[in-house]
Image (tube, rainbow, N blue to C red; front, side, top):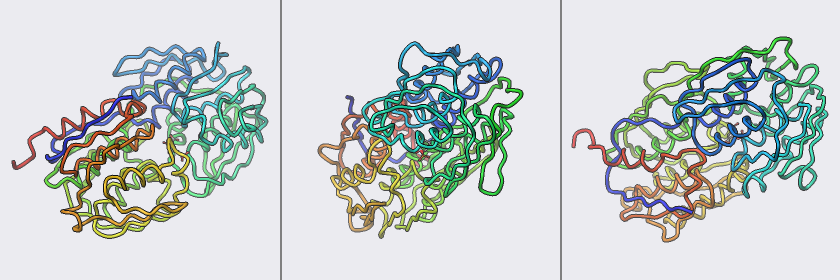
Length: 443
Ligand code: S3P
């Protein structure tokens, strides 16, 4: 259990980059593992979540050479995975365990998927139930609601599934299972969740089509796909911490290069702009079927906003840091329709409310969101106070969000239990420190 101490007092300045996108890295590892031949994945996310997915595929018989810069995946072809010797540990990763459950349900061997304490508390029924409708044989604690999951690979059949929840993990799990199923898998969801799987399928030439709001995938393609090199865009969700940090610390001016700006991910940009943030999206281009750009962010005063269910899927991972922005803004921010936050790495409505209140923020919890009365001018340009016992609750995004909040405090703050930052952004502290020590433009 490590700790992170933030000493504020300087603006954020200079140019930086962030780790490769975590969601895209998981998918890249899985699809290159199923390809014929070799693929090189560059600028991948070296967080523990993705390393666990890499190790999972290695244990499924796929040779992967790892350096800090690149993964070289020697794909085994469509039916090339083999039975692992022991249980697969997905660590803290909901994406890892749910996508692997789909991928493994239609193989001809047995696997057990498990993870850390947080993963073993999170709902798995959302993938287990539809996978069972496809014919999957999956056992787990509480009737398959909780991991560990024991999967006896079997013949699957495509289904027509209308997901009750907008979840890219559910969608991707079913599409990966659908690849190995007989017939067509049809999938729709109440709102579009992140579409990295759809884009990655197209990048590798997997025939996936869309009919209105329904995705249609023909299972067991007659020809598989060949390996391709790909460069992973920087993770928008990692950049989000600095977008908010540079906005709320007066005098800041930063540029973050090579950030993925897939519109199913960038709700924070829209929300922050409607709060008054000064964010420019520059040099838009494409990498691995994903839009990428540089972001320039300068500090600006913020005002509260109302965020309803329409904006939830594309902002889902950014709520912890958005709460920080709202806490120092002028006026109220009201978040509704965000009950999914309760089943993330921690219950983010509860953990962020408790932690930010300890820093002087004014927050009321609701079952599906929260009301945040911004400190604004009430507290010396919206400053938070250092909490005496700030805690991550084992949630990487809570840890990093509290660090960003602490940038506005008048004295240093220490956040406990920050080893979890390793799951997505191992260099968070050094990246933030570099931005804080760069001479500010015009100083
Ligand atoms: C992810 C999807 C999101 C997100 C998670 C990563 C993915 O979850 O919260 O961090 O890579 O598919 P849901 O779409 O299931 O809500």
